[in-house]
Amino acid sequence: MTEYLSIPTAAGTFDALAAGPADGRPVLLLHGFPEAALEWDHQLRALGAEGYRAVAPDQRGYSPDVRPEHPADYGMDDLVGDVLAIADELGWHRFDLVGHDWGAAVAWHTAERHPGRLRTLTAVSVPHPAALGSAIRDDPDQQLRSQYMREWRHDKTTERRMLADGAEALRRMFEWKVPREHVEEYVRRLSEPGALTAALNWYRAGTPDHRIGKVEVPTLYVWSTEDVAVGSTAALDTENWVSGPYEFQMIEDVTHWVPEEVPEALSALLLDFLGRR
Image (cartoon, one colour):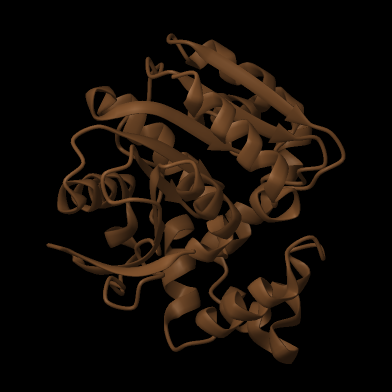
């Protein structure tokens, strides 16, 4: 069973879902675009059932009380700062960090900048940012896959287009692989005034000032072969950007939406990895 939390920080109060005993080994899960903490529903319950204390916040822009207007307030420094502020408020000095999509990008940066705070890192779908950046620069396939990011960053009509006709474009993004009730909840939330713009501000904030290096934290990276956003070049290069213990799991015939498309498989991989660390 999951529970609802409110986590106050200097930036505002984050809404969150949680499961497991209060004194369990802490695991923080970061969602991606255009989702919310709900995407981790299965993993939260699976972790909680095994005695972990799992918490998934609605991140900056997704929690209504932490929704600044300007893209500059969604830079990587702010997003990493939110992770640490949430962990501090929860009383977690060291914790396991899990991220999918944009949540994985934040998790990579958190692990590289603050390795002493993390027991492990699990990144789902999105590879190490340096591996992705290199692929975008040099690999024509990845350049095509990443074109959407440039469009969303610069096209101010993106919100209107995504929400037109009952948010048809937003719904199609999930490729009919995400539970319908989850999609309806994401659409409802992102249809609130200012919510979709806040979510897109993650793309519009610009590249991080901090040049990311290798990650020394024990890392699990999960990539799926039918991910339209991330090709094999960056996925396979990620091992070169982890200096600590590294595990790579490739899931065949699954799209970008791993936590919700194959929730049992991802929960099993996560529990196995954490159980050995």
